[in-house]
Length: 121
Image 1: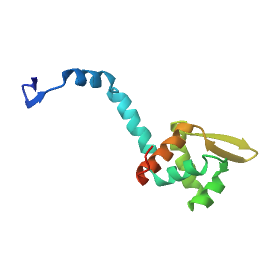
Image 2 (image 1 turned 90 degrees about the vertical axis):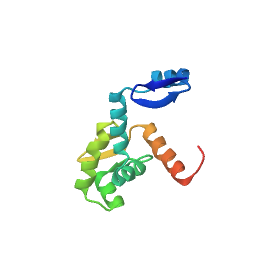
Image 3 (image 1 turned 120 degrees about the vertical axis):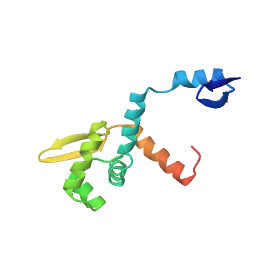
Image 4 (image 1 turned 90 degrees about the horizontal axis):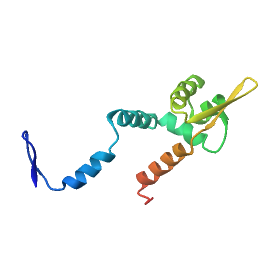
Protein backbone atom coordinates (compact mmCIF):
# COMPACT_ATOMS: atom_id res chain seq x y z
CA UNK A 1 0.00 0.00 0.00
CA UNK A 2 1.21 3.46 -0.83
CA UNK A 3 -0.32 6.91 -1.09
CA UNK A 4 -1.56 8.04 -4.46
CA UNK A 5 0.51 11.27 -4.50
CA UNK A 6 1.20 14.28 -2.32
CA UNK A 7 -2.09 15.99 -3.26
CA UNK A 8 -4.31 12.99 -2.58
CA UNK A 9 -5.18 11.15 0.58
CA UNK A 10 -6.25 7.91 -1.07
CA UNK A 11 -4.24 4.74 -0.87
CA UNK A 12 -3.40 2.52 -3.82
CA UNK A 13 -4.09 -1.09 -2.90
CA UNK A 14 -3.68 -2.78 -6.27
CA UNK A 15 -0.78 -1.15 -8.11
CA UNK A 16 -0.32 -4.18 -10.38
CA UNK A 17 -3.96 -4.02 -11.51
CA UNK A 18 -3.76 -0.25 -12.04
CA UNK A 19 -0.60 -0.68 -14.12
CA UNK A 20 -2.35 -3.28 -16.27
CA UNK A 21 -5.45 -1.11 -16.74
CA UNK A 22 -3.38 1.97 -17.50
CA UNK A 23 -1.30 0.13 -20.10
CA UNK A 24 -4.49 -0.91 -21.93
CA UNK A 25 -6.30 2.44 -21.89
CA UNK A 26 -6.81 4.27 -25.14
CA UNK A 27 -4.92 7.52 -25.53
CA UNK A 28 -6.79 10.83 -25.33
CA UNK A 29 -7.09 11.18 -29.11
CA UNK A 30 -8.57 7.68 -29.38
CA UNK A 31 -11.06 8.48 -26.60
CA UNK A 32 -11.97 11.71 -28.40
CA UNK A 33 -12.51 9.83 -31.67
CA UNK A 34 -14.66 7.26 -29.85
CA UNK A 35 -16.76 10.01 -28.25
CA UNK A 36 -17.30 11.55 -31.69
CA UNK A 37 -18.34 8.19 -33.11
CA UNK A 38 -20.88 7.73 -30.33
CA UNK A 39 -22.23 11.20 -31.08
CA UNK A 40 -23.24 9.81 -34.47
CA UNK A 41 -25.46 7.33 -32.61
CA UNK A 42 -26.92 10.02 -30.34
CA UNK A 43 -29.33 11.41 -32.93
CA UNK A 44 -32.73 9.75 -33.39
CA UNK A 45 -32.92 10.47 -37.13
CA UNK A 46 -29.48 8.95 -37.75
CA UNK A 47 -30.37 5.86 -35.70
CA UNK A 48 -33.61 5.47 -37.65
CA UNK A 49 -31.72 5.82 -40.95
CA UNK A 50 -29.21 3.17 -39.93
CA UNK A 51 -31.99 0.85 -38.78
CA UNK A 52 -33.92 1.41 -42.02
CA UNK A 53 -30.97 0.64 -44.29
CA UNK A 54 -29.51 -2.24 -42.31
CA UNK A 55 -31.08 -4.81 -44.65
CA UNK A 56 -32.25 -2.78 -47.66
CA UNK A 57 -30.98 -0.07 -49.99
CA UNK A 58 -33.17 3.01 -49.82
CA UNK A 59 -33.08 6.35 -51.59
CA UNK A 60 -33.38 9.73 -49.90
CA UNK A 61 -37.04 10.00 -50.96
CA UNK A 62 -37.88 6.62 -49.42
CA UNK A 63 -36.06 7.51 -46.20
CA UNK A 64 -37.72 10.92 -45.99
CA UNK A 65 -41.16 9.34 -46.40
CA UNK A 66 -40.42 6.53 -43.95
CA UNK A 67 -39.04 8.82 -41.24
CA UNK A 68 -41.43 11.70 -41.84
CA UNK A 69 -38.69 14.27 -42.42
CA UNK A 70 -37.57 16.31 -45.42
CA UNK A 71 -35.21 15.02 -48.08
CA UNK A 72 -32.88 17.83 -47.06
CA UNK A 73 -32.83 16.52 -43.47
CA UNK A 74 -31.95 13.02 -44.71
CA UNK A 75 -29.15 14.36 -46.90
CA UNK A 76 -27.83 16.41 -43.99
CA UNK A 77 -27.70 13.34 -41.74
CA UNK A 78 -26.05 11.26 -44.46
CA UNK A 79 -23.10 13.65 -44.33
CA UNK A 80 -22.48 12.63 -40.71
CA UNK A 81 -22.96 8.95 -41.41
CA UNK A 82 -20.50 9.09 -44.31
CA UNK A 83 -17.89 10.70 -42.04
CA UNK A 84 -17.40 7.36 -40.31
CA UNK A 85 -18.06 5.28 -43.44
CA UNK A 86 -21.22 3.86 -41.88
CA UNK A 87 -23.14 4.10 -45.16
CA UNK A 88 -22.41 3.36 -48.79
CA UNK A 89 -24.15 4.99 -51.70
CA UNK A 90 -24.88 3.72 -55.20
CA UNK A 91 -26.07 5.99 -57.96
CA UNK A 92 -28.64 4.47 -60.32
CA UNK A 93 -29.58 7.02 -62.93
CA UNK A 94 -30.50 10.17 -61.03
CA UNK A 95 -31.29 8.30 -57.83
CA UNK A 96 -28.80 7.66 -55.03
CA UNK A 97 -29.40 4.61 -52.88
CA UNK A 98 -27.92 4.15 -49.43
CA UNK A 99 -27.13 1.02 -47.50
CA UNK A 100 -25.36 0.20 -44.28
CA UNK A 101 -21.65 -0.16 -44.91
CA UNK A 102 -20.54 -1.53 -41.58
CA UNK A 103 -21.99 -4.55 -39.82
CA UNK A 104 -20.49 -3.20 -36.59
CA UNK A 105 -22.94 -0.29 -36.73
CA UNK A 106 -25.78 -2.79 -36.95
CA UNK A 107 -24.37 -4.59 -33.91
CA UNK A 108 -24.03 -1.33 -31.94
CA UNK A 109 -27.72 -0.59 -32.51
CA UNK A 110 -28.75 -4.18 -31.73
CA UNK A 111 -26.66 -4.31 -28.55
CA UNK A 112 -27.86 -0.87 -27.50
CA UNK A 113 -31.45 -1.99 -27.88
CA UNK A 114 -30.76 -5.14 -25.85
CA UNK A 115 -29.08 -3.15 -23.09
CA UNK A 116 -32.01 -0.72 -23.05
CA UNK A 117 -34.49 -3.61 -22.76
CA UNK A 118 -32.42 -5.43 -20.13
CA UNK A 119 -31.76 -8.36 -22.43
CA UNK A 120 -28.52 -10.10 -21.54
CA UNK A 121 -26.02 -10.18 -24.38
